[in-house]
Amino acid sequence: MIKNVTILKLNNGGAMPIIGLGTYARKAISGQYRQAVEWGIDAGYRHIDTASSYHNEEEVGEGIANKIQQGVVTRDQLFITTKLWNDQHAKKDVIPAIKQSLSKLKLDYVDLYLIHWPVSVNEKGDMNIDYMETWKGMEEALELGLTKSIGVSNFNEQQLTRLVQNAQIKPVCNQIEINPTLTAHKLVECCKQLSVTPVAYTPLGLISEARPEFIGKDVIKTDPKLGSIAEKYGKTRAQIALRYLVQRGIAVIPKSFTKSRIEENINIFDFELSEDEMKIVDSYNIDHRCVPGLAFEKLSNYPF
Ligand SMILES: NC(=O)c1ccc[n+]([C@@H]2O[C@H](COP(=O)([O-])OP(=O)(O)OC[C@H]3O[C@@H](n4cnc5c(N)ncnc54)[C@H](OP(=O)(O)O)[C@@H]3O)[C@@H](O)[C@H]2O)c1
Image (cartoon, rainbow, N blue to C red; front, top):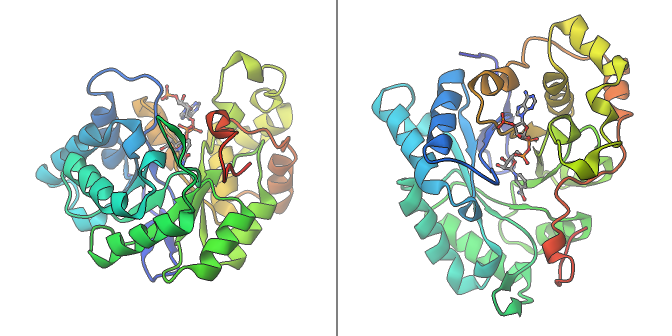
């Protein structure tokens, strides 16, 4: 099991392991999420990221329960995140939504509950609910002990600043896409200024993506400069990308269904990139978004 995982202090005094296991997949076969969570906990992950919209909370919960039952971990050693979906942004819907997630996860509380996107939409169309209203429901979830912390995801600088300035309870984090081809320096700086921890989703970015629309943009997969850095430390390109993010003080939540990659991705705490190497990784930035949320593009509060 990997030791020395950095623990980040949150603005409410809580603590979050800097690496978590992502669990979103477009396609999965039965048991795959549970298996990934079990391999993850065995490999040393103590932070797991799910969402109601991933439709995997039951299996994620099974994996957690199995590892607790086997005595590998206790509940208080784990940091579990789930998220409120866009059709449940009315204040009255937040508590029922988190209770439903908890019931699927078979947990009494989560460690972090996030507003998944600043947009609100249901089958009838744009609900145009102000996320400040949703936030009041999030604050209530915290007060009821259903979650230890609350935060947001996919909020841009203006949205995050407005939320922090007007909230009774500050968000502890903003989960956003960050990777070597979307370095997001301005938004990360804004998060840090506001004492909001940035969490990088899709942290491998174009290193992992194989969708045809990315061909030509994915030089990072073959560029010899990155290859040399990886070779120097006996690591892979993926590990260099993750290390680059954690060295910027950003939490990462890589997803994998592959046991060896789950183990590989957390094995990044025994080396340090130099300033020059950090600059090389930074130079791959092309502001390319793997998750543009195009389905929400026409909605009020679309962040990008
Ligand atoms: N808040 C949001 O709106 C939002 C949006 C997107 C994602 N997320 C969260 O962030 C997590 C991570 O993002 P993501 O899943 O989009 O992207 P990612 O973690 O950057 O990449 C996942 C992909 O990379 C592959 N992979 C994993 N480790 C690898 C390695 N060492 N070398 C090469 N390829 C590797 C995986 O394949 P295999 O599984 O086949 O190994 C998978 O196809 C999600 O699972 C989810 O929990 C949140």
